[in-house]
Length: 141
Image (cartoon, rainbow, N blue to C red; front, side, top):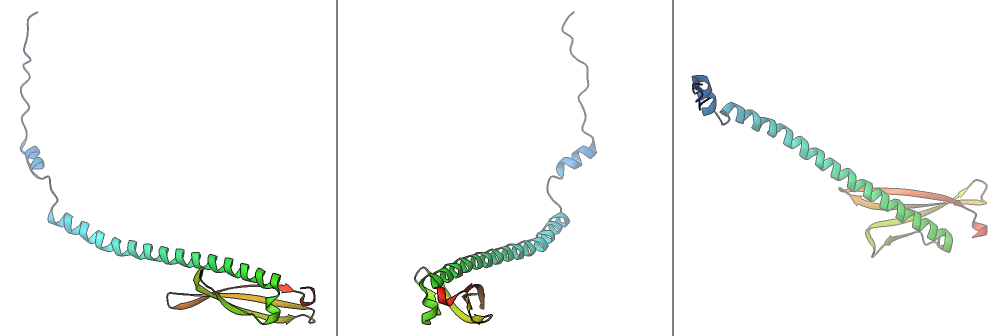
């Protein structure tokens, strides 16, 4: 048992394999197709992101306005300021983008009033608002 060397001949590279190895990059057509796909998808993705940001901002404003309207409605009922004619204002300095107004209407047979508070803000050159209301007995406040 001596040292025998393997007599497997070295593998020869076929001409097809050499052609495949020499073509490692992209062809012009492949690059153009990739650029066209990106040119179609990128604007759609940007529009989707813009829409999501707009809707998120609108939801934040509505939520904040509803909270402010609820607080103002509670304050007006608790203090009785609505009977003194204090029916509009703003939320300076904490919330300078919002303002409020209130309306009082007799409801039913006149023993109950409806107090509504509306909070306004401007978003995208349009005035938006949230309205909250409650029924109060003017004789018991």
